[in-house]
Amino acid sequence: MGLDAAGKTTILYKLQCGKVIQTMPTIGFNVESIDYENVHFKVWDLGGQSSLRPYWKCYYEKCSAIIFVVDSTATDRLSVAKDELHSMLKEQELKDAVIAVFANKQDMEGALSSAQISDKLLLHTIKDHTWNIFNTSAITGSGLDAGMKWVANQIKSK
Image: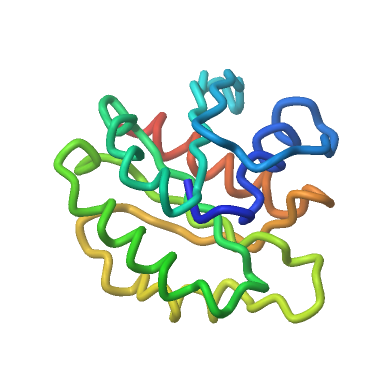
């Protein structure tokens, strides 16, 4: 999940196929399966446009983990990303979900670090969910393995 143009779909297909696939803005959702660290993930890639965000809650049921993708170069949108993330975490259906924040587009000039993103998203205020943040690049694949391993290990330990 995450705002539009954060790199969610690019990450999904990089994880599934191992390569970058040309994508278009997601209108609605993509659903794919990924096996990672002996965990079978059913991945719902939800469109992040403001008109689609109210529908995110339709996909929360039985959700074990949220990967919240942030465009680390879009500093002007981090406040909106923060509000969406914290609003989502108030939902009862997500009370047991672990949260991995992917500070994406680290390969681009001007990208904020995961520490800076963490501060802007007020991650330190999240007390009722297990969470972590990872520097990632959907293009190079950097950080995706670490993030997915963490999510898989969190799910396996439940």
